[in-house]
Length: 552
RNA sequence: GCGCUCGUAGCUCAGUGGAUAGAGCAGAGGACUUCUAAUCCUAAGGUCGCAGGUUCGAAUCCUGCCGGGCGCACCA
Image (tube, rainbow, N blue to C red; front, side, top):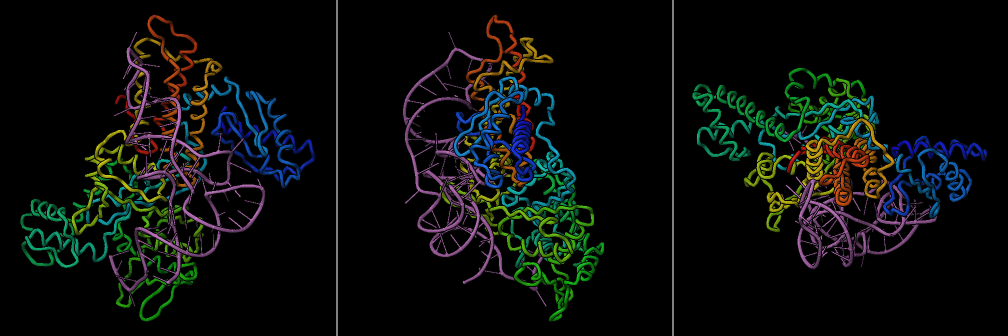
């Protein structure tokens, strides 16, 4: 029996009790969930339903709980129901009902954990959106890992997801970048306000290699050539770095196309129609203060140039017109000042800022090495790139360590630890559980022991088997909760718990026959449980973009 | 100054109002004739930043204070 099924059964029992006693059934919630008590004395599952509704039902919680318990204990698959504390219902399942879960998981396979929780949602998920003026670096990496996992998790919860990377390829920063590359090609120092990094010199060499005459001809031709070539090379490098990190972007959206295609004009007109645009001091403004921003924002400067904010507005409106009902932005805490103005764009466009736009703010990653904080700076050359991180620890360890903690919490990475690639990273604990299972299954094949088409779930009655079954049963809810709360780290934490539960099972429950012993029904039942465990570990790791190794 | 955000074990972090606050790592002790010991078991480790409040119940919600990070452009 799955937790969801049990919750339904409990709710049904409560409905019966309410009907019997003539209580108002509207007091009961439409859905309820069961918890897994930490203390094993509190049963396999517990429900606080009676306490939640007692007050409004006008019945003491313990009395209500006792009545529900009496009915519930007669339901199939239920071994016992106790009322405890202020009104908890503590439920134990039959071994057979619990063991059935192994079948549910194995038969679902890859699909175990998927749901329709967010079905019908058409989501645009924007993250990273690094400027194409430098390599993807550590500052972006957390959002790459978290964003891509979120993409996978939202999709698993049934949402239609498009991941998107915005390219700020218009404006003066691009010109400064191109001029920095050109200066490097000429062997000149970096211009004022330009980009000094080593990568700039490398780009310069690449441009010269492809175009030996790049520094000849009219100034304007040179500028254009360096702009086009440096941009093309830099963008290709960014795409390669992110692809190597396992991050998929469905759309790379160029800011230039907004300007060239008239989308900015179109957006301005739309905002005007909604009545939130005005002119003052020679500039054109959006009255974002109508919707919680602390000051109005300029769309067109008095010199006629459109602001970055105008492009942001156009981009949002463009997304909505492409059919996305939810636009999610993943931003670092250094951009939290944009939250109100972005929400105001949605409101000014006539949308619901509490539904159509969602801005997730993540805390920044800081670094220590040798116990000393490391400050990252493009200028000082202490930038750490995504490629360097992957070279040092590999994709799995990097993605996992960034995705396993809540984006809300400031993260401190110790470079000494992370580059040591030791067991300090819990990813190995999880992966090892998968590799151990894969090894066991190889041995089973060698021994010609097969899982077969059926098994007796009642044989899975050992405490450690029960623990494992319960943990496997949690997975679908972990995924849907992670999707609803936009918190991929929940999947990682769950996998660590599952791996631990599996290791403890493995420690005391022999699966395969030893020596000349024959395979038994218990062997087969445990093979179903082991395969179910492998499936959930693999499905969970997939959601994090981390590999599930066959061997370690 | 205004605003946002974070504060939980020595370290890195979980804990969407529930029962005795958890994990990993580090440190102490134990288990290899191994279905992979990258594992398991035992013990130790806490003023959940501080002080009030809300309620049957608060690490969780509210207020104030303290401390860290970040942000406050007709910049991009």
